[in-house]
Length: 149
Image (spheres, rainbow, N blue to C red):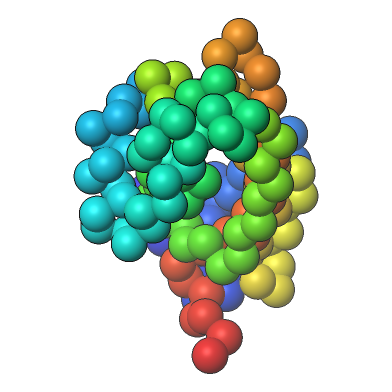
């Protein structure tokens, strides 16, 4: 890979419309939800107890939102290892239940090469039946850029 000059985009900098390949995660079974609850401290019964989930009107225990969001970074880094995420936001559109998985994919919405190489990415997670479950946006910078601090 050709290195970028500090603050300038490398010659192979992505363009608006470029696709980010899909990657699948899961299915997230109840054991995975239990492990996540232990390490994250999020032991909300909604995620662990089918009776609590039913009482909340769900057909099963929902996967932790932050567990699913943790799947976005490996997709970005698998696409381009020369980036870092500077901003990330997401909207949850429907729950993903224990036993289901997600497929994360995206595309470049905006590409800026100079004076600071930055991409705005539109990312989605799709669940069962290819339903849209998470809509996200990330700003990513080239590693040649010094983070504001």
